[in-house]
Image 1 (cartoon, helix red, strand yellow):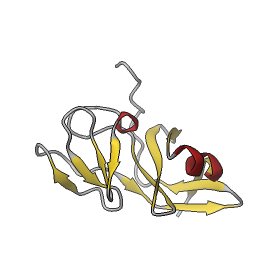
Image 2 (cartoon, rainbow, N blue to C red):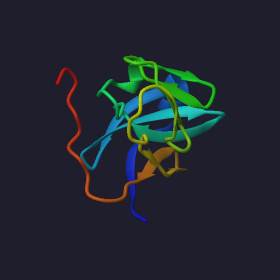
Image 3 (cartoon, helix red, strand yellow):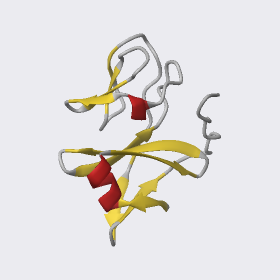
Image 4 (spheres, rainbow, N blue to C red):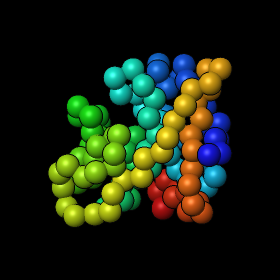
Length: 113
């Protein structure tokens, strides 16, 4: 498994949610129960940015349609039918967050696009 460095773990812990780009993918790093997680930054239903949403328990809520996605599995818990949210393996080494990405990357969506 190849690991990609995406940022400082202390920043994620302090801020709670941080948008990053890795291998052409827009990701959201977030804290859940003391651990860093990485998910797709954009809702698979209607391209809303999750950084503008909120965490509800173990889920992230889409700011546009209030759909809920499990942060650890990507499964949809509430909302209109849509694809599963991408989640990525994460490790922290020497204070740096690293994610493992599989498959060919999609171009990262641009804000306002």
